[in-house]
Amino acid sequence: MITYDPPIDYNQLALTIKKWGQELGFQQVGITDIDLIKAESKLLAWLERGFHGEMGYMAQHGTKRSRPQELHAGTIRIICVRMNYLTAPPEHARLVRDKTSNGYISRYAIGRDYHKLLRKRIQQLANKISEAVGPFGHRAFVDSAPVLERPLAAKAGLGWQGKHSNLLSRDAGSWFFLGELYTDLPLPIDPPATDHCGKCTDCIDACPTQAIVAPYQVDARRCISYLTIELKGAIPVEFRTPIGNRIFGCDDCQLACPWSRFAQITEESDFNPRHGLDSEQLINLFNWSEETFLKRTEGMPIRRIGHEQWLRNIAIGLGNGPDSPEAINALKSQLTHPSAIVREHVEWALLQLENSHSTAAD
Image (cartoon, rainbow, N blue to C red; front, top):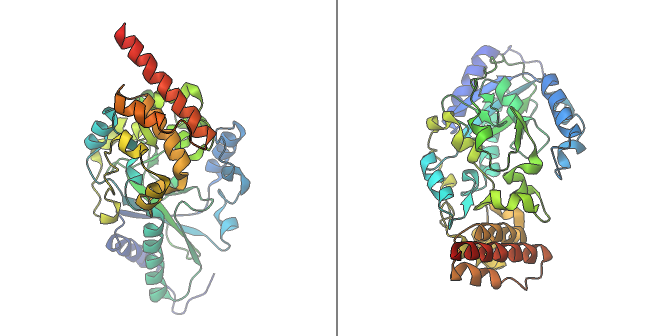
């Protein structure tokens, strides 16, 4: 840690950092220390139960995730920030989800990829600090390194981890992104947030695949976000019907949470939906060629799953949707797709529609 002459008024600097953060578009800024012992024990227990599934990166970094000084030497404080991303009230998301001919995409992913935007803003915050105090040790993170961002944000007073494990704010629900600035500045820390879930189990009850196996415990292997994004192979048959029309992620636990009514609409235009992806028809999305997929998802979180998983996920949505000639023809057009994964899910979807047609006829 650098010694400054004249000495820095860290209390005033912390207040100024929060002011700069708001000017840069963050709705809240908090500061915490690096003690994550409790969070580390929970992480290790979660990994031991295999709840991370194929997300090997959750375990491969050892204790760097829960011991910030191992990830970035010299770190003694972490400046945590949050930024709202919701572009329409939660009611709009519910309407899209409940119309089975639509493809539902998690609301965080319908606009520009948040990683670069947030990281740029955090770096701008770091630059302002550097201009005020001179060179200091720091490193910015936005969901791109082994960082326990939700426990850190909770310790920094930005919210508490709800029973669905997402961070919750009394002022904004859970509809926001998180980012961190690791630093060697001995800033004063903020008090942690307190839990306000009470006896409520709405998120647990709402999960389509019962992924919230106990309060504050999520088995990722059952989670629709994991199944549609992280899982690269075939989606287990038992989860295909519960997935419904959710083709990239799932917001059901957030939509069910009573604190969702306090969601704030973002002022960041970059998060606005692109190409109608907030409410597009499944058939239209399924008919995208790989070239179209890559072009229309450029600069978006959706692009990371690739066209093969895109078709896999939408095939499930079509199989769970209305039995129509258009849906059947769209699915049949991919029966000879080069990917065995795509073909398997297309065949499943066609069988689903055939069964639903037979049931309706009876």
